[in-house]
Length: 401
Length: 142
Image (cartoon, rainbow over all chains, first blue to last red; front, top):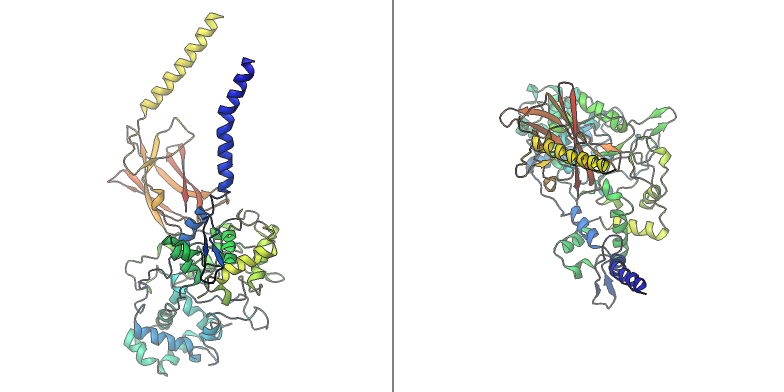
């Protein structure tokens, strides 16, 4: 009898705290408890905050917006109002194309989020890659899908001389500037064009174009208002963020693993990943992505480490000097930012997905066989329900201004 | 039987004493804001870095110092440093440089960059003659 009482005593002493602990943990859920806030709106409909404490903490890493900006030290025209206007004129001018029919806006249309709404490879003359949007381009470390350039002015030079794009040889560029109203601002900012090499003329035009593109920054979004409310612990304001977007955000931060690569206030880590998108351009021809990008970068005379940079300290040059060439770079492409993503269709490096739903569906049912053998163990099929796909899309839509 | 028990006890006590002596032989006074690295090579000198994980910004380059921490203030011939993300099976996208600073008798490790949030394992190897010692430290980046 004594043994039995002792056994019961032991059971109470050791099991009861565990039962209580388990009950508490269960209430906490996987990621701590949700903010248990239900607020009635003026219209009488209840609004709720659905995210956990941990997720609310993670949300803060995606703000604030807009970030602090400072002039690009590698470009002496950066932030100069007159230079921005000069760059704007160049950006819209067809004079920078060999046959005088194309300008920067031919592919980076302002009413298409400074991108191109066309699905890639619709016409034989179309390029192999999807046009990247220029929204928030000033914040990039690497430029283009493969990061062939480490600065915006060098990236701006590339399409001017590309045979498949604007096709204006560098020696012709000098003539265009000399014979146009661009000569006066060129002289004002850079001096006598006759004293400049063809390459330097190209670099200077690239810097004027870059000064304009630095002004293309998106405005605050419903998501930014949500982040601001969370930062201020204004739960009433935070709960105005639509529930579908909240559920999508929860997936984005959690099960979807999206925020591993789409991190920070730009929703990109600025680096390169294999997203399981085929990199065959056509049978037998492969887009090598970052692998080729690093080769191009290392050969480029126009990096932040070059004398063309106006930054005497070469402060940004560490990246081109230290970037590592790895086997996994093959077929990987830059992670695009997600701000105003609703306006930048089509999606992926080859523009193969027309809608955000298709992108979410791609990741939900990703074919891991398409990833490199030594690829990152991040992407896995999520098998999202229709409602979850819609929730993620709702969240992505809330990133638009 | 008693002798066997006595000898076993004596063996364990000896082991504890030897281990304590070995530890006492390599004291490591860890300065403020420095932390000790881990190594499986227990006979090797302790190593320290002045890295503070909470000051690392995601996607931004950072630097730190590495030094051996022993009475002799020994200096390795060569040091290499890197980092991996064990959960994702990848390393960093940049190759850091390691240079020796004569003034502080420590190695300056420059241009580490963690491009993803999560757990990173810093790996540092020091080479002295034909001996290599491998150190690690795990940090979590938010």
